[in-house]
Length: 181
Image (cartoon, rainbow, N blue to C red; front, side, top):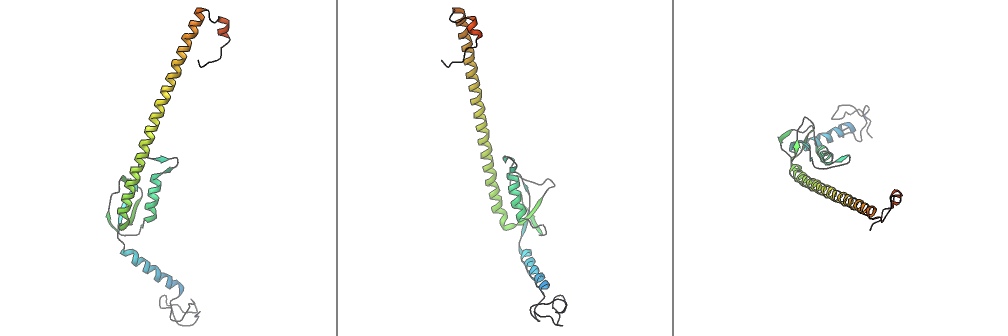
């Protein structure tokens, strides 16, 4: 560890003020800033496009929505400090004064296709859910109608039995158990 009078070439502080590994090396802080600058230079070479939040409108499962999932992907790719080159529209994307994402251009097309596929999947699930609900409602209605008609028939039969003397009023008052004859 160098702790001499020679200055760091970055911040011009001596080794006494900021010890470093070697007399001819940068101090740790300047070395980290240099790495950050190199990363920034690399980042500046990446082309970015702007996209709005994505909304599917078809499928929500409890508190989990596909919108949150898709927008979490956009958030992960977002670089708010990037220079925007162009704005592209994703399927069902809406800019409502909410989040605007700047994502790498090379990820935009595959992500757009993924969102199209996700949207189609959500639509299919939504349609299947509607068909299942409609079918269940139809079966429930038919079963209610069947039970009602059986009740009407049983009531008619009871009246015939009372009229013919097959059962008496006292037996009728004893609330005969339901039989499935």
